[in-house]
Structures are given as structure tokens and as C-alpha cells.
Image (cartoon, rainbow, N blue to C red; front, top):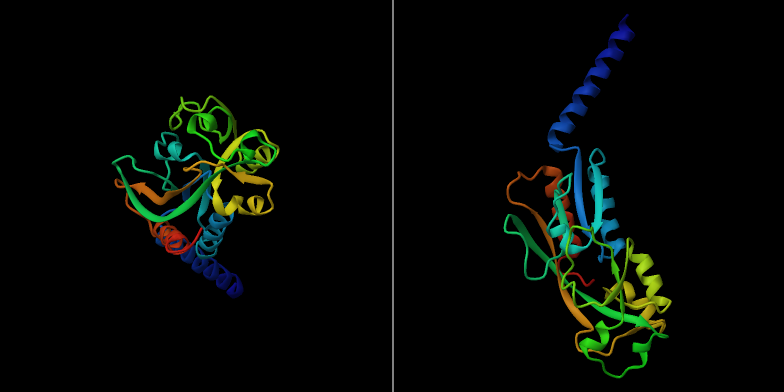
Length: 229
């Protein structure tokens, strides 16, 4: 009987420890929105660090266009979003700036725009654009300016289509630099072909931040603030 009692006591202590850990976490799942234009490797680094510190917390990652994250009306609600927010964002959210990230408009070296020494905005917009797919109930920024577009689910497919000369693509400069350096992709000859976009953390003002959520926020700040991307 004594060994059995010891086993029962050990199991009870283990259960108590698990309950205490869960209570300290204050949540078992975090829903994270991530800009579809953000480099996967940077996000993967943050998430792996978080998983090591909080292995009990499930992470559900939603990679979407920035305007969709800023106007999220789906279920489940997002606990935190990392996205480019420009000048406007919903007033019910807290926005913490992280850094500015260069984005660049490119086309294939075989594309008609690749040989142009200068272009107007109208000329650029007259060509097919490759974009990351948005949900049907979310309006795109300036939806009337792009005459033709191919919208895809994944960033990697957008780059592949651009490499094959299908159209113009705007993406994070660091991610596109390897193709630019080899000459496979060409930066458009336009004054606004390279621009800086503001990356930020966005979360609701109306909910209490859990310890796990705060830890994820801190990891994002450590990764993106004051670092070149």
C-alpha cells in the first residue's frame, strides 16, 4: 500500500503543479495576426523563443493583409497583431511602433517595365499587379487604382509569379534583395518604388493583457526595435 500511496501523492503534486502553471499563464491560447508582407524568418524566430518559454500556450497564427488585420471582425478575435499600419488604425486599439521596414516595387527582368528608365504612376498601375489575397468583405487600399491584379494566398507564390514576368509585386526589401542582386528582379524606375512602412504591435485597449501575451509583446519589441529589417 505504501508505494501506491506514494504514487498517488506524487501524481497529486504533479497535478497541483500543472494547475499552478496554468493559473500563472492566465491563458492557454493566443491568436496572433501577422502581416502577410512580413518576412517569415523574423516571425519564426519570435515564435520559437515564445514557445520555449511558454510551451503550454497554443499559438494560432493568421497571416493576412494589413488592412484585414486592422479591421478584424472574424472569430476568434485577435489577441495581438504585428502589421504595417500607415496613418490610420481603429481607435479602440493600442498601437506600439516597432520600426520602419523598406518595401520595394519590383518586376521580372523580362517584364516590359524592366527596361524603362523612368515611369509614371499611371504606367505602372496599367500593368498587372500581384497581391496577397484579402477576404472578400475587406476593401483593399485604393481598390480602383490597380486595373488588373492576380491575388494569391501565399507570399512565396507571389514572388514566383513575379519572377516569371506575370506582373509587378511590392514586398519587403530584405526578402527580395537576393533576387534583385542576381538580376532576376528589377526595381521599378519610379520615385516611389522604394518606401518605408511603419511596423507596429496592435492590441485591444478593452482587454486585460495576460502574462503570456505580455511576454510575446516583449519578444516582438526585442526582435524588431532598433534592428535593420
